[in-house]
Image 1 (tube, rainbow, N blue to C red):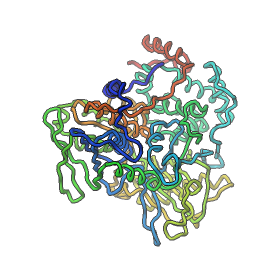
Image 2: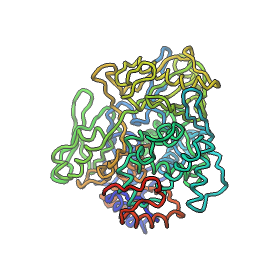
Image 3: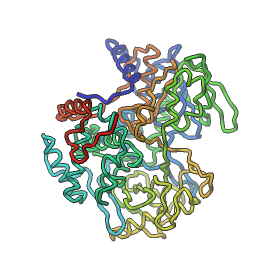
Image 4: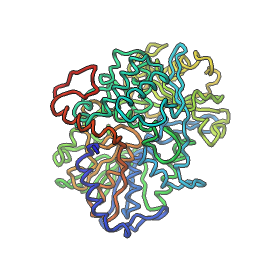
Length: 598
């Protein structure tokens, strides 16, 4: 079976830890829930960043006997996943960086959720997940398409041949997504090309190509773009097809197809897509912090990592600064940076680059703005029992109606008159708006809210079933990480990593050439590959395992569940490996036989 080429350091770390763990399973220092093994000398870890990656690493390490201190620049935990509350007359309303999904093909993150106690839940925070039953791809002029989840597949078992796979997938595209038959077949063939590609081709060819070019989006119908373009892809991957590698989107697309076939889902019976049953901070992050504190993790909020001191290839200390600029020195045996991609170059000194020249390539990685905006409504409005993608919205909008999934009524927040939260994300900041003809980056906060609301209404109200009216709108909130809106100084402090073509070679491993410096996040090399909570969780586990190995710990490594691969396609991948070596296209790539120069 072909394996995704995990980063070399991480792979070596995992295998060496597995070997170390063999034979000592009975004496593992991994403690049961609510306890941790006593910290031993030489096992102190300073973690910078309290998002999912940093907290995951802290979780894995403290349960294995390490003394862990987490430093976070904000005054809140959770990073991009945290809830962001806004004052509203009689109280606070729950906003967020942007809504989030827990897809069925996530495995590492659900394991963590099960290990976080939550009052009344037998399976901890994991029991706070609620399955989604539908998704909507909305268009203007009555072009809305709502599909049930999981999709009603036109076959009862997995097609046993590649041609059967293409025929079956094409029938799904034609019947459910209303693609013309030629485009439905073409779309199925493109998916077959990716799924049957060897690892060598995925990283050597598709990693270097945009999804737009791979899927031939520029010469396709609007219906085709609704599914294989940004209309639906944006709900699976936090990126845009024209600046993301075909390998990154193809990987998630393949994962989702296996999920639809129930071949790759977490064993939870909660379907292909899930959300939390309340604000993230209340239903996940706060319980997590409480648990980690109870087993020994120390937290310091309002402390930003500002740099490292090194002695050759060894970190001797780190420096953190509070909001006033006051600095303090941090000393530990191991240092783990779990800060965002765009913040790491600020702490990348010449000494660090000299010790590990590969770290300089991090500067080549790119990030993009995906900014959350919440519309607080006086009426409950379920646009769909799941996510909504606004296919004709020039600002790249997606949304979800929160109240239908939350256990706690919205009327218990704020002044008691809010009954729903329409949580949306703006991912395109350079295109002119439909109504004001200004790009989002040119607009004031009020103009951003007004235009976003208008674009959403234009997609929804023409359908006739559900109407959004201005008198429903109680208030709105934009992610406060967006500053200077309406001025040339507009900026955004919570950008996400995008997997632009060729970026894999610039992404670092969890290990560095500096013996006690490690990295975590969804932007390091992970099997999940794309920017998401599962990738961040995996990145935290990889970093924890690297520290376990560096310390010589006898504890079993954190489990990292590999991606699902379909055994039936393995022979085709072996054939494709030889075709790729010979400079020939994939056997299903019958439309365009051109092959890029390697």
